[in-house]
Image (cartoon, rainbow, N blue to C red; front, top):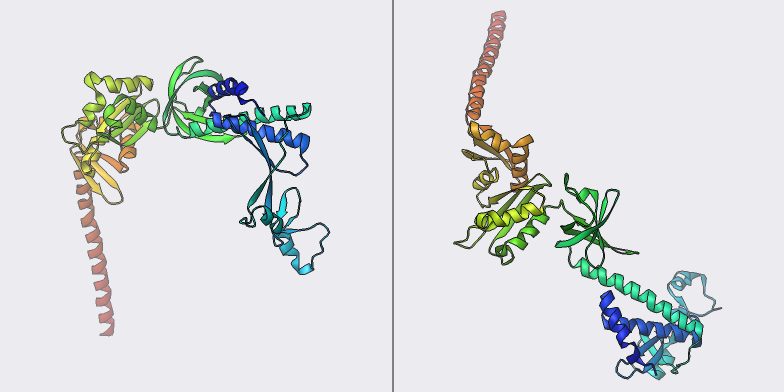
Length: 405
């Protein structure tokens, strides 16, 4: 008999500290008991399983064998014809500790089929040697580490695409290691915001970009530069987003400098921009502060591309938007709005193009008319060339007629 009661406090403590369920810990103990049994009483190649009754503390042991027929195995010393070599490669050598022939298996379980596993009860043992005890201990420690890694991976994998809060633990080279609770996340250089400074002990929010499984445990990559970081922070500040009343349609971002975000709603009476800004700008300011002062333009989404493109160029106010072929748009602006529409180093129009998905060409109000006039001026020259060439042809024809005469 195995006194499970004496292990209950330890199991509860491990479950709480490691974040592992009691069922997983009991499963680990069963694996350790099976390993100890095999070490003292089993044979090489055997597969042994143990089952622990948590209520009574009783332990039962089984040897597991695969049921096979003659088409699945070959025996040691068996001679096969040359033409059956390919078939022989597909079969496994019979091992009495791992396999049992179908005829023998049916004597124990008449309904069993080839390929299934047969469990054969073993004599219960309670006395284990020192080596077997050490083996059990190693199995428990190793399995708990594996289960801990698996649990962490599953937990953080389910959080991919969410905001996670942590404290900067250390900075090594260009990588920043963030304590996110049960493990450490990495904020690599390419996911950091240009001009943003980080220091150990600093608390920050980051976007959980991806979780990868490695031999050392889950590798968690964080981002401060990913565009969706903005939408996720807004979700925390604006209840109307999480409730579905307001939808974030698109985001265009140049990390650390400026972002544009388009929002819309299908519910009458709700002002999407006003909800995002908040009373006296409290909501948008909370997001800006979290992003270290990054400017944010909130744009109202529209199904009408002309209106949407015009809105995207805010704070500029276009006079007219002309939709052109191949997802291009000409935006006509007044002279005093031209620099606002373009933005510093073309940033405003660049972000507007990313936000809307249209190629935007900003033009001054008189510029388009000048281009049309210049085209008209070029047109007569082409006609004169054509007429001169036509008269030249006529002269040649006249000359030919004179020669014939």
